[in-house]
Amino acid sequence: MKRKLMKFFKYNAYGNDYIIIDPNLLSEKILNTLNFDILYREKGFKFNEKEPSSKVFNLKNRIKMLCDRNFGIGGDGILLGPLFYGSIESFINNVKDSNMMNIKDKASSIDKIKNETSIWYKNSDARWFKNSNRNNINTKSGKKIPFLRIFNSDGSEAEKSGNGLRIFSQYLKDSFYLKNLRKLDQSYFIVTAGGLAEIKYEVDDFISINMGKAYFNIEDLDISLPDNISKKLKDGLALDIPLEFEGIKLFGNCCNVGNPHCVFFVDELDEGFTRKYGSIIENFSYFPNKTNVQFVKIIDRKNISIQIYERGSGYTLSSGSSASATAAVAYKKGFTENNIKVHMPGGIIEIMIKDDFTVFQKGKANIVFEGCYYL
Image 1 (cartoon, rainbow, N blue to C red):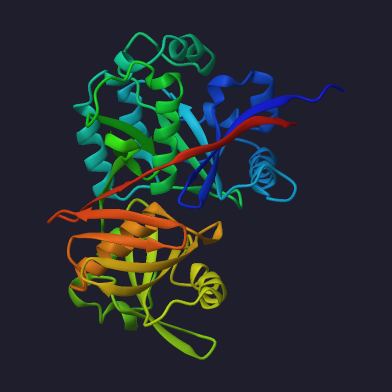
Image 2 (tube, rainbow, N blue to C red; image 1 turned 135 degrees about the vertical axis):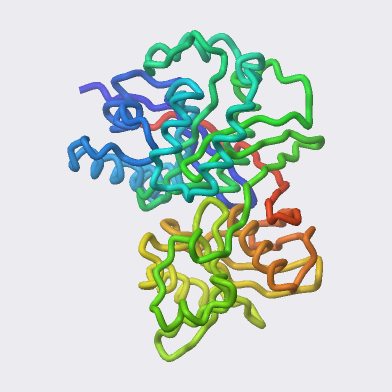
């Protein structure tokens, strides 16, 4: 039997690498083989509950294989997109039904998208809409917003990824989707399971991302604390939460920037410590859907250094959402200013936080290679 070829792109952002699979470049047969076809038929931000569990299981296994650095392409995750599920009206309905966004993110996303112009239509190549019929999209309206689905290397789906968004934005710019782009510092929107992300292309190939607001209140977090701990929280903020395991006690600070994070401030960073205890904290009983973990060393008021244990991917050289969350927590606790540099093993990302704790990050991404994967 003749093997099928799947086109892919490999991008990198400060050592955080993702495989981009653009379904608009693939045939129906390949989509079916990958089991990615189920992502077209469901209209929300989660696997369709009507799909056979075996098909979802096979999709997750396929993602694991593709991300395997010995037996596959290798990567910290997969970016599947752009997907165009339909009109802005259908997007609003999806947001309302989502179980992956908190109430405040839902309201913010709906408010922003209602004012969105047809800018993607104006700046895209005609091939975008030629392909769209295959994906059952109503092409009568120019108001199309690209959806990005993000998968960790273990096959689980992520709500949002800062580096993933930057990589995906660079891909859109490199490919025909923004072929006619003429103006920098212009906002574009990308939809993720964790909410709407606002993108700006800047000079010298920098990309700025509005990650949305950082939330610290326990009511806005996916966290389940014992009553004796939750009652002691000051003003309902999930800060300085004690975690005890293997004879040690740490104090975590929880934050949501579209996905969950638990931040720990330490005197010194140690990779072995991060790898060992990051996994334990990721799966700690307080976090029903797991959490991303960061260990942070304060350098000065304008610089912090972090190590990351990413949910679903493990020890990671860099993470845009982790940089955003740690900067937000550090600012919230008064350790730093609102405009800082976050130093990670893979590089430095600039973070700016507004008074309402809207978080912006600025950095770069680049293509490493492209190729074909034999299925």
